[in-house]
Length: 193
Length: 181
Ligand SMILES: [Zn+2]
Image (cartoon, rainbow over all chains, first blue to last red; front, top):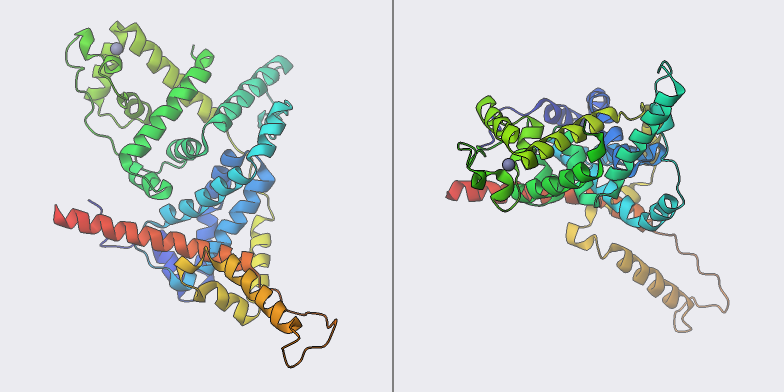
């Protein structure tokens, strides 16, 4: 049972934005910019596109300020907008992504993941290869499974929130997650020591 | 935190028939184990079973590997000019004429899907009437100047409202269902 006796802090901020308090919008942006961009990056695997989509997310939040009602958790609404945009982008760019994957493109950003003080070139290469494999395993998941895994793993959203975001039941979310993690487990099995 | 249920059915005895992998359906207990939502007793039961069951042992190891692999994937930092760009976009939007902003808000949600079509029809109708020899102001070869309605922008603006409304409706429904139980 969800109790909404006291509005959550984000919703409180959003209500202040509705009253014209721009500083509260800055606070909301400060709190959610990184998770939203990171979620979108992991969804679309392109930093420029992720930031562009995140701009659109926050622009939509700002546009909706006058009609905002805190009936749902703010993060649920925020990630629903972000997921909606990401799924649309993936749908519209499916063929392009498939082509670049077939061309054997090294996934953008994989190289930048390596820390400069890693001990050896060999370790760099191994780490790069491992990250590229992880990213490609995530990218190969059906878009809804991918969104569910990313929200579950990195954003720590609960089943109810993910269900509201993906417009399905909680048991459907568990099923999506189960299938996604099974696929990942089989693909990344060799990482098990 | 993730909401876990008691999912240890079948793990209280070493009977192989009680193995979660052999219980049929999706063994979501592994999902709960991975996210850490099992209580310590449930977790210990599963791990004890896995110690004696090679299949479950391999599944647990696999999930552990996935968990640590995903932990390793850290994204890049957000560009330093992200906020500046966003505020520039907001400022630009504020400078839009009132009717463009009003258009985005005034249309009811069900009309959203029909907006592009309706706008195209209006443009077409406008062009026909403007060009028609029966229209009072008709002059041959007169250029048609119709200000373009930014349908896409209106469409996008309605999307977020739509999402919020849908969410409200779902929550209302859930509330009503919970009330009936
Ligand atoms: Zn077993």
